[in-house]
Length: 226
Image (cartoon, rainbow, N blue to C red; front, side, top):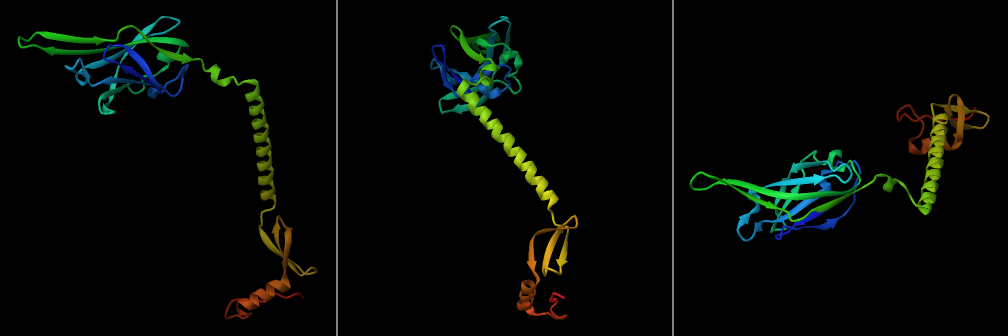
């Protein structure tokens, strides 16, 4: 986000920059303009319409957008303007470098005789908005490359481990029960195969008896080795 102050001497100064504007960016929050509510102790700037004009650094092609008043009481003494929704498009950011821009505020009104009076306030000189190539964000230093490569390898290893775990869980899922009479154990089965260490039938029987005994009334059944 880049915030510019349109001062009462009609100069424009960058007051806040929390991130670069990248090539082909379409973030409408990337540019904000702050204007004091009162100009020359006489004119209410909220009564004026704001226009943002720009010229691209390579082709010198130009364009303009009407500003949107986003907050009429910004920090109590200011007006906050932004570009309209969907405005910050590749038209404005399609070329890397210093984009020139200016601000103009206009107001048309009628005097007592019905004549139109146009009041115009324009920024003095030219301000600049820097657009950086997206490649500068994607090219790491040698040290960062080593770190990224390490993270990539670790991620690949993690993905392989998770795939192996998922395969193991799928292969070992329980789909039934099986009693091994020779060992006296109850096993879970997966695809007909015994899985795990099993449960000792004598211990299971003791637990069932302690929970309420073996009878048709309480529903517990004593399992015994034959």
